[in-house]
Length: 472
View 1 (tube, one colour):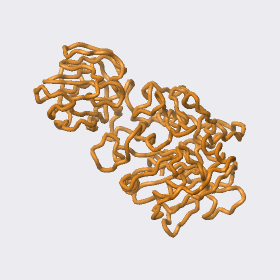
View 2 (cartoon, one colour; view 1 turned 180 degrees about the vertical axis):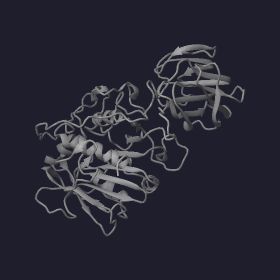
View 3 (cartoon, helix red, strand yellow; view 1 turned 60 degrees about the vertical axis):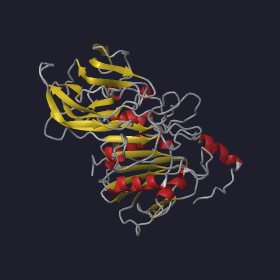
View 4 (cartoon, one colour; view 1 turned 90 degrees about the vertical axis):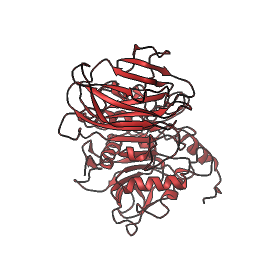
C-alpha cells in the first residue's frame, strides 16, 4: 500500500491543483478531415426520455428527443423509484406498449435498451418488435427479456435491417408490475451482416477525473458527468464545434462521434467485467481513463486487466508526480503503477515532472499511432507530465513511441508508449495537457493543448482507432 509521505512544496502545489500549463506553440497545419463511419446511432438516438412530459398511463403521444412516441399504459416517470440515468425514464404497466411514430432511415444493426423493474414490484417480461411498413404490421425481434432487478441492465438485439424501420417495446406478462426503459439506442445498418465499423468508447468520470481544477471527461452537466453526453451525439455533424459538450476533453469526444463511433461516460460506480451491469466493460471496445485520482479497488484492477486481456483497448493518461488533486494520498502515477504491479503491460510510470516539447519520435511509416488515418504525428508537448520506463522482459510487445529530446530511443524517459496484453491493447501518455481542449466547467481554468499543435489531436485519435482495432 502506498503511504502518502511526500510533502507539498509550494511551487508544486499550484501545479498539482491547477496544472496551469501555459506553454504553447503556434498551431501547425490542419487536422485530417474526419469521415463518418458506416454504423453510428440513428439521428435522435440514444433516446433517454429526458424531454417531454407524460404523467398518466392513459394512451397518448409525446414528443421526445428522437421524435413522437405513443405511450400506451405507460408514462414518463421521475420518482426515486424509477430506475433511470437522467431525470426520467419510461414506466410501463400491465400490457403497455412504447411505440415509435416515425421511422429511422439508417436501418438498424443493433438495438440496445436499458431496463429494470420499478420499485418493489415483481419481475416483468417484455419484447422488442419491428415494423418495415410504417407501423402497419410488426415482427418480434430476438427473445423475450425478463426485468428482475431495480438496477438498469442493457438488453442488446441484433436486427440487421436495412432501410426505414420503426420499433415497439411491448410488456408481455400482463400483470400490474411495472418496468422502466431508458437509453434506447438504434445503430445504423448498411448491410453486409456486420453493421459497419462503429466502435463504443467509454471515458471514466468516476475516479476523481473532476477533482480540483480538472474536467477530464467529454461532458459535464451541473458539475457532474452523465452516461450520455448532452445534447445527444446524434446532433453532431461534420461542422459541430467541440463546445457542443462541456468538458475539458470534449474535442476528443466530438471528434470520435464525427468518425462514426459512439461515446459514453462512467459517471459513478466501479469498473466491472463479465457482469450484467449496464456499463460493464465487456460492453465497450475502448476505455479512456484520463488522470485518475482515486485508486482502483482490487476487484476493479482485476476487471481492467480482464477487459484488456480479452480484447479491449485501454487508453492510460497520467500526470506528473505529486499531482494528487483530491488529497487522498494517491496521484495518477501511483494509481497506474498500482494497477500494473505485476508489470503486465511492460511499463512503469516514473515519479518525475517534465515540461518539454519533444520531436524525438519513433521513425516508422507503418505505425498506425504515429502515422494513422488522422495524419502523421511529429511532436508531443508535456506541460508537467510524467515519463515511463519500459521493460520488454516483462512484456516483449511494449514499444516506445515518443521520448524526451535529449535521450536515446531506449527504455527510459518515454513520453508515449503502446503495448499489447492478451488479445487487447494499451496506449500510455504521461500528461493530461495534450488532450485538454481549453473548455470546461465554469470556474475551472484549463488550457488548450488539443490545438496547441496539430499532432496532439492526431496522436489521440490515431491511438483511439488503434486501440479499437479499426487500424492494425
